[in-house]
Image (cartoon, rainbow, N blue to C red; front, side, top):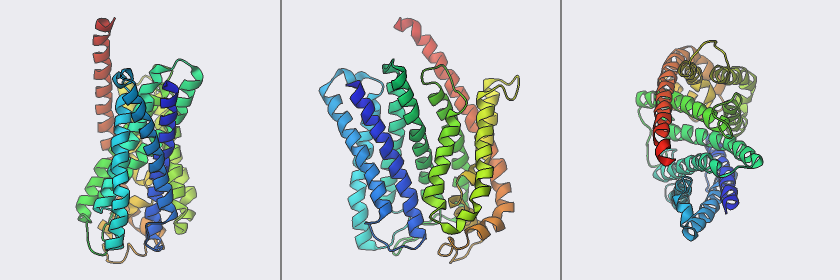
Length: 372
């Protein structure tokens, strides 16, 4: 039965990966001004992912109903979240079709899109939570290796889903035919500057400690890097490659983001810098990742800052054609606006993460004697 539940979580991992990949591709599809329709390739990928997650939720739900003991396990909450998230997404799908039929071209922050994004976020968190919790129920090295491998795309999907949830509010893409849900540029920029480095640093640290700790006692070099590299790859193929004008920037993009990720992982999980405490390593690594959020999120976050720094009524429609020019024009100012605040927020969130982790370990140590 545990093997079936693990298989369901791996299926859900594939679903979470497809749903956010399809979402990112779908936004690019719309920015390329392709015909507005519910029946698009990107929607097919998105809802294929939702379908996989729904099947996984159904399998887990049936097994939990049939076995009372399973409902007491720590991973049971993950399947409950999957049921909730899948239910929300299944409601949002037909609702989005109806919205398209009634209102035509819609914005990113439409009610149905926000509902769908909420379901997707719940699902992506549930998958990571489930894989991390079910690990302790397997002694086989092969199963633990399978779980560790599945956690990499699971964390990458959750990371990108969190980023896109912020995009819902930060990107100026919510002006539809009938409704304009765009936030004012200053508010949108503040949301991006605060939320994105926080997400980047916390997910990076959590991935390192969780994946590296499967079958061991702590983080190991390579786990967080693998997650970040996969995240970047998803962004490249779903957002940059379809935006053919931005492809020329790919070598520079890779030269910036890949070394940043590896440096942060080296700081976090090796003896570099020497004689540094675990807390110091976390704070420095979080600051490094947080400072790079603008580049990690290229090209989308460029929209937010371009809307603030170069306010026009037409730049959204020609953004694909001018991605690199807009990026280069605003880069000197955006570097100041993002690198230092991103590093500060990344460091602060990493410090809070460390304190939470230490308190959790202390609580576990205190309860261990009573359990024995």
